[in-house]
Length: 586
Ligand code: ADP
Ligand code: MG
Image (cartoon, rainbow, N blue to C red; front, top):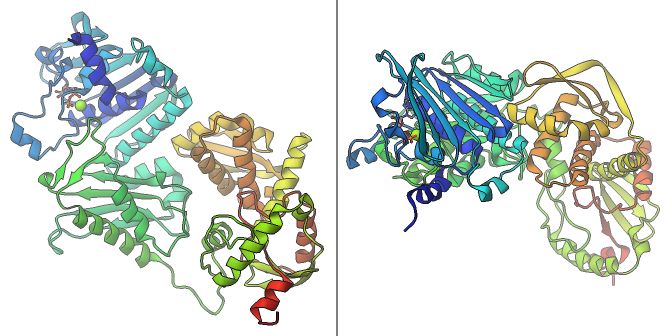
């Protein structure tokens, strides 16, 4: 037989995986208690202290201890209640689970009761109980999380990582509950707060900053009556011009509950089909309102997965609503004076390209040039064999510029046939090698900005920035704090002088968010690659002959001229022999 205490520690593992799970459960309880103001104070990334204070209904004096028993909930009365759950909690597990693995103090007074109570538990055992004067509401302080489970402690990520997850959760709650006033501090520093005005646009501005909010489109889904759909979808979706490298900015909520659902995330991505490049993802907040009995929230202890009775219907409701928002807003392009918009240029720069040597990538049709697959296939085999030969083969031959195609590729002739050079990828390579050489010599050139650029960051980005300030400094960024979640960029790596510094910084942070290598060197390379990408000539930019010649001369001087820093090819070689074969001459 497991001892009671061990059994509850094991059960706790399912609910309380990490500090942010504690924050999530406590905030859910506050919301269920009808709180309109919730203060969250964190110390040491949640390991030292997680305190959640609310002005909700409070816990009646007679129930405070009971609330910590396993399976004690005031939210369900009978099994049939499980069919239609209106509260965020219902399993009665969280408080017991948290108590089992921490030291916990609760001070609570129920509205209408004269005195409050204060109880202290350690590892789930009651240590102290008193009546106490307290404002109506509940304050729960969780200290020394996992102090009695060393194995779990070992697996905790750095405080900065935990902090980031906590920030993410709090911002999601704030977005789902705009009428609740949230306030979050880390180690005594206020990092996020909302006004509780009830207007979601206010929360959006607090989370993403006005610049990003300007690029969001309202999603107004099916009117449940009109379309006989039971699912109302609302929220915000980014304009196609605002994309990210990962899906992390797609947040889904069902009846006020944040959920993770790969299929629905895919429905959102699908809604942008052909509007944004492959491999890029939008920002979207999707709120789905369904009749309670249409959704089963009792799937997993953490309650972030749900099951829909009619999954297909939800999928199409979401996809349709987002698509409508995005397509309805897409500007009509003036075909006469068309020039590729920024997003398109990035697209051309980022999509996988036809390959020169035996890499696995499949060529994909792009906006500028359509490769002949058969021709490429043959060249690939030839190229693989060639690549295997000598080091010298890594060098590029001297090339003569013929011209530019599609404002994206340079056509050049070499001693053995024709070369098509991707101007963006080639320039990225050139800049990357120059930058890395500067870095090795400890001579990165930084350029001060006359008027520093103010950049608004999400709490997550702010934390990341904090974490990597030193690294960015070594690479030429000079950044100073400027109010909560806002920084001023005072200087940038010199090659970035002509680009938007705030956008460059945002992209760098997005990349860092994706990179989980603990190696400083790798992180540095991530930043340098991003900086070079931002500074490089874009597809869509017409180049003069001199510019093309200079770019090719610089590429010829590179150590690894055949690929861009992201590993994609910078050029395609069509050998004289291949051309002859294609024309039936040999
Ligand atoms: P659940 O939320 O699933 O009911 P919990 O273990 O999270 O289970 O909480 C147990 C009970 O404690 C809740 O049902 C509720 O009655 C009470 N409770 C917890 N936190 C609060 C709070 N902040 N305000 C009021 N009551 C609370
Ligand atoms: Mg709960």
